[in-house]
Image (cartoon, rainbow, N blue to C red):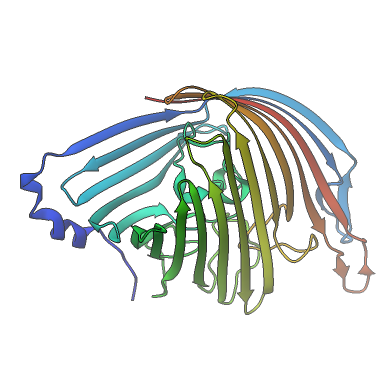
Length: 390
């Protein structure tokens, strides 16, 4: 039986109150044009395999490029339809590549009962960690130019599916510790809520947290999913389809983002285990640490470190975490200037090292014809972003 989650139930529940409530709709636009200069050095560039099974690779290559990009343009709409019922839509327009792209990031309805219990239905960010749910795709609200590597959109090289369609039960501000919880039931990895699902399995994501003092949030999240036989990963880069498998993601988060205080801090650890009947088991992880300090109400220097490894070592890749590269090291140094609440200027210097390992090739009758090698790409970037909202 196909699983299809729809808005109808909540609409019926709230329909009786719509006639007595004045609808309040708010529309906001977010833009974030970027100027980028980057220099790339690549060692052992992979070019293919010849007829004898030997790797074809080139020597170290170097290139430098500067460009101006309009970045993402985000349409953000919220509407209070009744005292309890509200809707949210977030659409993203992008020409980061040669073609223009449109993506519906979120589209959901919320039925509020009390602080300790509400229901959301639709397409939304899965409740994994702090950053993924705290910030929209409108980057004027985000402390850095880009999201951390692990939770970037796939169109920007991100390794995870961080959104899904389903139903979420949630509550917050419970007791003096401001306990919160979220339970999300969705279609799961690789589906994005489409109608091509061929089983009745539902992915489950749960999050619990607390805010013992103002601005300090402690969160733990987990996602459990069953991968359908033959289901490719969201990146579309899988070469061997699984004969069924299980996936579990665990996220631990600690954040201190009090707007009235000078220091700010976010640290998150993501650990994933993927087990497949025909492909084996993989353990992957990613973590990022962000820190900033408000020198004035307008000026905040900051730094962030990202580390991601897909698989137990650099010699393997987890097809459902980050197919390539299998290891990413990234350091970002930046400064943020807040002209006002609707206009923020950010400047960053970023250095990044990506590694991918090509294993030995074994050809029947020839044995090993190559010893394998590590492809290493080093990037140095300078970015300036003008993030605004209106």
